[in-house]
Amino acid sequence: MVRKDGLKTPWIKVLKWRKVQERMKFSATKERFRLVPIAIGVLLMVTSCMSPGPIKPPVAFSANTYERDTEFDRSWQNVSNGSFWAGDRMTGSPSVIINLAEQRAYLFKGRDLAGVSHISSGREGHDTLKGSFKIIEKDSSHKSSLFGNYVDARGVVVQKDVDTSKDPMPMGAFFEGASMPNFMRIVNGIGMHEGFLPGYAASHGCIRMPRQMAEAFFRTVSLGTPVRIE
Image (tube, rainbow, N blue to C red; front, side, top):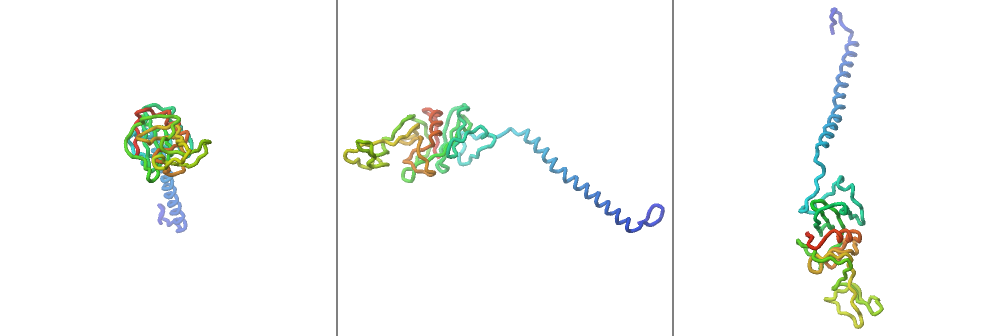
């Protein structure tokens, strides 16, 4: 390397100068890469401010495709067995979707999801009917006229879990219908009501719910409320 005055620069100085230049280039490149995530963060902040917010599912959606939105869930109350209810502060006409595969019931007010309840539907041989129906009866202290127990005069169970259409009544016994609090009849003898949930389909065709959810659904629906079972 030749200097302006015509003299040669010692090689050791040339090497040092080249190292200095390489470090300067590396520092500049490093600085540019450091600024990239900052720029991306600013862009995401601007985009989020322009977002219209979470989209709530319409009444006609399929329940098995629903995923709860965290923003929408902030006001929800955990009731029991993973069930949720937020409908008391909401307005709109109620409607219900019952998903047998998921073993869940979804209640809407207008287009907004107001509650989700775990259920136990009809077991094999007593399958819950699928289709579109309406609430045709409400009875807060309903008792089954078909399923229950045979008891003696003292009220002691002689034969439990009977079907009066199939099981003959023993001599001197009486039929005691199964208790179905907060009964909401949907079609024939099938309805939603408070009952035991073993974690799988186990009823004679009805849709059992935890007590709190049966109460919430019962006070929200009315005669004529649409119900879809899928």
